[in-house]
View 1 (tube, rainbow, N blue to C red):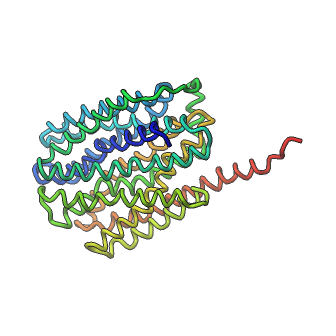
View 2 (cartoon, helix red, strand yellow; view 1 turned 180 degrees about the vertical axis):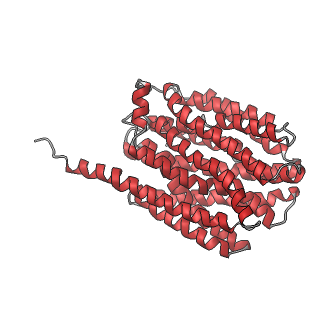
View 3 (cartoon, rainbow, N blue to C red; view 1 turned 135 degrees about the vertical axis):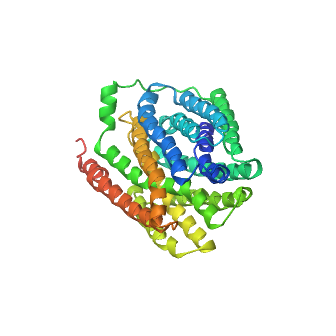
Length: 399
């Protein structure tokens, strides 16, 4: 892993300043503007992720034809501009919704090009699989740092600071990436029809289904857990730093889990199935705990969450470099994932209402989703990847 790899890594970590800041801004918005409620901010969140999902499908296909480093930079700069404007929305639902939808489209310019840039740099499948796992820690670290900085900014200067601090980081990284991008040669691209056909294959579609399910857990946590802690702790806007310290640790434990996941010497598919099952168990325990114990169980769940997520969004697409659809498959899989993210933004408020303010149904839902994801990964592994490996092993050597 050289300087170019870390250039990619830090670029995607920075993207998260414009991706998770809304969850920190939301509690302050709900206190400041009484016209807003959980359902309205849930719609804003879902609007962002709906645009992000559509953007993943489109940018995954389009970005195959452009320099990925330029594409990544443009996404950062455009997202910076939108976050600057979002700070002036003054709690108006329509302005928040439209602004977040546009920002979601710009944020979607990052991931598929990030995965492709890394895959193009690696010489063999083994190095691609190893670096793809480490690359996945970028969004975990970015999530954690963005949450912490945004929380203290909001606590110190109000909800607008959550958007404006993101704008500064995004713009700065976009410009510096443009100035430091490497010179790289890329393979000639195939026709659009052939590219789409190569993308819509069984393993890629099943990986997309798996991520759709898993993202309802991951983004359920990212989007709603700060509000959960805010409500449970009876905090005010000035206490957002305390919430930030709690949620800051979630992606950090995800990084530890991913590094352990990467060290385990069995197929990543099997490791993912084990981790997903343990994730489900952690959410079974969570509703029966409170205070520090609840935080610890949530952190244990995060330890098991991120390894399988990295596998689906990074390792799986990188397996299709020879088919020349790394960005396209990454875009499709991540796009499917954000279909789940859109849904969870709408589902959580309904589940909280069903529980009359109690979040128990939310955690039960995450248990079911964790085990369904494990089943989906199992199906893809045994009906495609395992079969293909067995066939390759059975091919006779040339005499």
